[in-house]
Image (cartoon, rainbow, N blue to C red; front, top):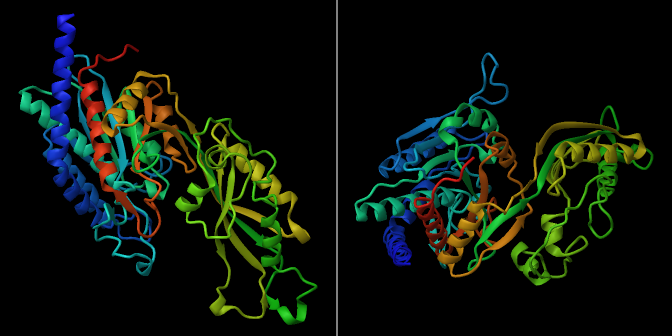
Length: 481
């Protein structure tokens, strides 16, 4: 009894010291985050890859400065078949590893340092790559997605190391770090990277810090992610353009055919009308239409779409969006029947459905509903697996406890309508590891959009939660198997 009381007292003292370290170092953590945001590390092919390389170099240096790791490297893996004679290299990623001591487990900390393109500068209230504090939020491209994820890992590691150093002891927990450089460009070399760096990344638990929290005051563990199917659909009806005045009314142009065809993808209430796309059974927290309207920016008078509980529509049901159309813009519109057009179709599929099966269902639907005999072709398909977390493991229990202690509120188990397809590759390569999907975003963060931002106080709590989780692993024996 006395020994247990002594252990509890020591744990309480250590956690109090850890909280103090997170707070003491938070200004430095924010300063490093701002420096990373200033690097325009867009991984898309049209942007300068030197910026992604600079971002990787900056993060590698920050990891070395912790003094925690046995190794820190910047590495690339080939895109596509690794046996190709002249493979295209992927974007630079940062990896680090500290081996466990005294029978402790190892945790792999994942985030990504590449960002989405900023879009038009005029859509931003402040420059996208000039981090700006305003109203308790840090604005800038990557401030939330996902350079804050990078700095949540670094801030937690620094606090953990400093607290241990103040006691005059070494850390025992094993820590691996993988900061990817092309998540925003489809993680094209991800599978090869895992296989080539398996030894340095192997772990008992994996934190994927690329999701969000329930709101600014409530933490969340992401337990369900929809899968993704995206492809270009080309619609052809003529072998050349024709005068709309001469032939309009008798000749179906490609735009007419495309509009009629695309409309068949939805029922009148906006629900997906594609046979073969399924819905998952998920328990969902309460979430009203007013919150949806506020968080999504739905205009007054515009109604939500779909059927069933709102969070079921967002997390468990399929969704189909048209994210691009190749057609003459209004400024260049002439009185011409368009012979061919191309659209980008982006579908989200329910957890549990295979994306290849979903793609086949979409193709069947479109081919069966092609109006006027329009010719269809399908190009550049990209498939992403959905994901359901096994919440029965010890790591889930530990991270929930750490979140509750850091935030002062119990975490919510939530789904996410978006997709993180590479998680399926993590599961395949490391089948024994427990996957924990966390993050620093919140409903007002506008990731991928102009005026992306990070709620600073939520970020501080996220750093503390991860630091508490790591500290408890530092005192936990590794599970057998």
